[in-house]
Each structure stands twice: as C-alpha cells, then as structure tokens.
Amino acid sequence: MLKRVIFLILPLLFSGIMLHGQMEKPAGPIKVEMKRGANGWQIYRGGEPYYIKGVGGQTELDRAVAYGANSVRTWGVGEAIAILDEAHEKGLTVLFGLWVGCERQGFDYDDTKAVKAQLERFTEVVKEYKDHPAILMWGIGNETDLFYSDFKVWNAINDIAKMVHEVDPNHPTMTVTAGLDVAEVQLIKERAPHIDVYGINTYGGLIGIDKEMRSYGWDRPYVITEWGPDGHWEVTKTDWGVPIEQTSTEKARFYKKRYEKGILADKEMCVGSYVFLWGQKQETTPTWYGLFLEDGSETEVMDILEYSWSGKMPENRSPSIASLTMNNKTAFENVYVKPGKTYTVLADVEDPDGDPLEYRWEMLPESTDIKSGGDAESRPEAMKINIGKGSEGGTLNFRAPKKEGAYRMFVYAYDGNGNAAVANIPFYVKK
Image (cartoon, rainbow, N blue to C red; front, side, top):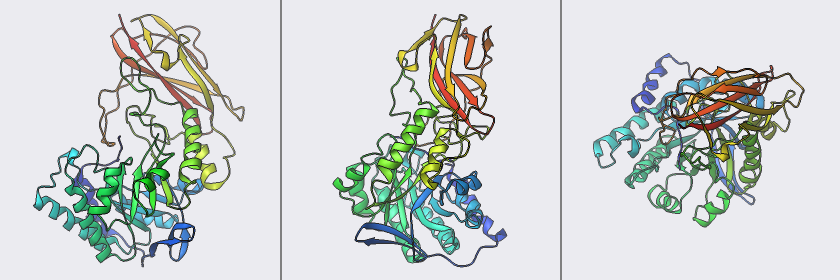
C-alpha cells in the first residue's frame, strides 16, 4: 500500500489560517447531509441530490469545470483555505482536508500534549471556516494507517470528528485509509463512531471494493478518495527491482474500467470519487500519477475522464501509444545494454485525428528517492542523450551511458493541440 499527499509539513498546513484576516468570505453555509433511501445512500447538498465527480489537487480548476468535475479534494488546511473562494466562484465544492499527524512522520499519539494541541488547532480552523459555502465535508486524516502501530490515532480522529459535529452541524466527517483492511474498518467503527463517511485511496484494487466494504461490516457511505493507474507497488518489476509503468494508453483503459465497473457500479453505498492526481508530481517517475505532464499537456486519460463526467469525448483526442521497445524488447523482457554501445528505441504512436506528431525523448537515471504515502520526492536530473543517425519521429538511435546502473528512457509524442502520449522503458547498463 501506498499513497500520497502533496503538502506534508504540518506547520505549513496551518500557516494558511492567518489568511482569514485578508479574505472577504462569502456568506452562509450550504447544508450537506447523508441520507439513506430505498436505493441506498445519497448526498444532499442544499436539499438537492449530489454525486461527487471530484479531482484530487488544487490546480487547473477551470479545466476541471470544463470537463465536468464538481468537487476538489484537499489534504491540508493551507491548501483548502487557498482555494475556497475560487472553488465557490467556479461552482466547485471542497473536501476540506485536516492533515492529522502520521506516525510514519514522527507524530506520537502517546504525547497527550501534542494530541491536544492538534485538536485545538483544528477546532480553531473549523470554527473559522465552517460557514463557507464551498465546503462539502471535512476530511480528517489521510492514510494515518500507513506504517503505523498505535491504534490511538483512531481515538484522536474520533475526537476531531466529534468536535466537528459539535461546532459545525452542516457538514459530514470523513477519514481516509490507504486501501481497505478489515481490521481498520473495525477499528474505525469501534474507535471513531463520529466518522460519517469512509474514504479509500485505492488503485489496482478498486474493482471489488464494494464487496469488501460490505463483507468487512461497513454499512455507511464511502468515497473513493484517490484512484488512478496501477500503483508502483502493484506492478511487475524488472530483474533489478524497479517497477514497470503503464503507458498513457494503458492507463486510459484502466481508468475507464475502474470508473465504470468500480465506482459507478456501486450505486447503493459509493457516493462519488476524487481522481488522483489533478496536477503533476514526481513519484517514482515524473509521469506515473499526474493527470497533466510537466508542461501542462494532457494524455488519453483526460479524454476518458471528460467522457466519464460529461458524457462526451473532447473534439480533439490525444495520441495513442501501442508499444515502446528498445532493441526489439519490451520493458517486461528486462532490457540490458552495454556501456557506450548504440541501441534503437521505437515508439509506435498514432493520433486519432491525424495530427502530425512531434517527439521528445528524455533519459533519466532511476530514482533513488522513493518515499511512502506520497511524501515529497526529488526528480532525477535528465541526462544528455547521445543521438545517432537515423533518429526520426518515433525512432531514436542512442548511445548507452558509460556508467553502470539503472535508467529509464521516456518518449513524449505531442499532437500540437495540447495533447500527448507518454511511455518509458527501464533499462540497465551492465558491463
């Protein structure tokens, strides 16, 4: 299990609290309720049925609206405060994240003073922002269960949720776990009864979550709070131990299947989802989870999301990549090369609109800064590619690095309309 959050340093999350003196807040909360009817659970916002078609991330909100999304997930206080007004102006709701201290990051739930101080800080936040009309619900903690051993975290989360219920009668409470585990479901039921909604970050295991929720004993609503491609902990690895990333085309197929057969399929208990990541970040690679490339380009995944949310495909579609090989080998065939020797990389890419494609290649050493839970990672520095004769379009002839070790070759195929296909192939330089 993994998962992730964009800003993780606790003091920074609370630094945004001071912004309220400069903000002109919209008037009046919009009441949000969870009601169970004959057909299952339903969110009601302002008395009207509401289904979450959400994005996880705070950038490109205009694109989120244009493609049919209606909600934004934040992980920490500073992030939420920064976008409340903008989200409201654009008709988006906000899952207001309260970043609860994580054991893996050094928070000690035996430290009663620290636990009390955390509750007091959140009380101040909730009192200050509870009436903002953009708020959909409070997200109390994200993956506090990742690499933890102290179950008292659930008692602390319950104390925060209880406080929210006392201070803010208009918005439900949620906590989020990394994947789903029967023990954690039971712990939350027993130790955190003030949690109204279960949030799940899940990737390869999304389809089937509905059955697990029921068999584990959860009978209230849930939200898929992160979902996307296969996680880097879930995929096949090379012989030298690095994960093989799906191409943008492969990811698009999985997004479609997971949305239709995993999220929409459970109409009784699942009240929506937040796709991850509405933005770009380095996590194992620079392209693994971001729905945008570093230059803002979109891939086929975005075509699928637009169709899923709005019922229509974009007028101009993204390129598709059928394969990426190095010396006729795929990533699954463990590509070893000799230092300084010349090799050929072939990218088989097509554009559904017939747009001419422009190719960019990038070679990176394999990342060694691998973290857990989405904690910030540094991006490897791109290396100079010694390009040989015959390199054109989707064909690259290059000289392998002289230094022994693990690398990745990335290909980006752009259609000139803001869309791209992307893939990478890991290879190992061995003497």
